[in-house]
Picture 1 (cartoon, rainbow, N blue to C red):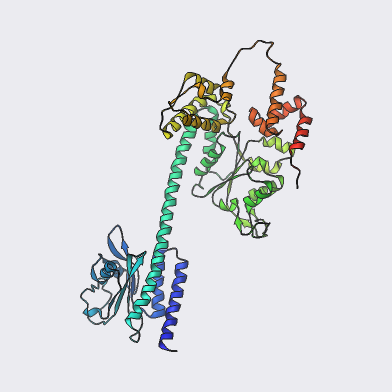
Picture 2 (cartoon, rainbow, N blue to C red):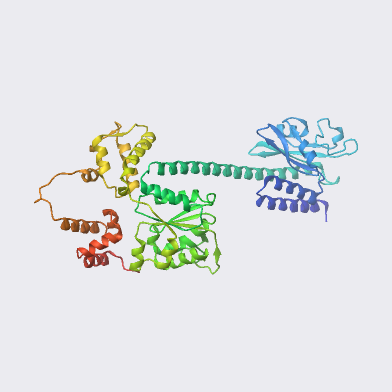
Length: 519
């Protein structure tokens, strides 16, 4: 084989191996050392270094070496412009020293060569990233005397360019890691503040009991079922449970079972394989896989369809599942925290929720009380949100006596979420800082009015209650759970009133007209 063809093959093999190393690189120093080993094995390089500039120390230091002892490597520290290595860095041009014995700039700081005896050719090329020097790559002569030193330099320049990309990738990954760490710390700080605020402004006995239950169950592996109306803080409590558990460093994954159509919910929960259904053009892991090692929060679990309930039950029992379109059984380690605003016991009696799943989820139930059942917390929450949004929008906010009385007498069917949204709206709209009763929405003011009416003007209590139930059902499409939430009733309570006032047939008739028939 001609000499040039043989050299080209050696160079090609070396570059191919280096590219493979860089493609799978995770540890910068280890990969740089492997690159130098490839140069030694393929091209016969006896010694080589990758020297990178340390921004903090303002020095060039050896990050990886071949043919040098650890002690020699530790001595390889240079200032920019110092010695041959420093000159290569500062001038950004390659340097060839045909014989290190005759070069006064060659410092031999590592003391790895016997300058008195060895006639060694030394090469150094700058490692440039976007035109700026970040280090120097050095090598003793790689090829034999039959190959020109210029060819050595050209090849080493190509390798240095690959090394620059490796360093850039490593810096980008390190920057992203630090960014995520900062974000994680910020989220933990925010959560800690929200956790403290959540319970500091909830001093009622009912919420003290919730806090104690959270403290006791958080360190365990038990499934937790959070029960309560919308807006009471179930999602935040689920997050607190996760952060107070041994899984705090793992992922916290949320899935709202009511927000996803039934036919897509299984795919979202357990994932799917390519071709599992029309439109499945790629493999997609489900939320249970995303939550491996952490916590999966299933919000509105009472809305889950029966078929999927059976698969969830099996997952809760064995922590095993199959993606849609796959027969491979997968196993993960996930803690389940579920939440619902439905009366699951009644749903079990009605046959819309599996009894075995109910008992499996109901290992440790926590009932989060509605705001109207803990009136002691209402003034504290009002003051908390006034201070919060006053600081956020840069205006001191205060309530007049009339406005405060109206807000305290209002029953808050949307609970804490409704209060927070209303107080933010008031903070945005109010320019003077004082919130009077005229700034409040009409429905809030009306709920606090106690106008006296003569007995003749008052309709019979039962008829008034019946009209309210019918009106709520009409506004909510004859869906009992929604009407119950609006009226501040449980599903059992509104069901009792529907039967009491003979509305059952009317509800069924209207529901059948509003329900879309299955395709």
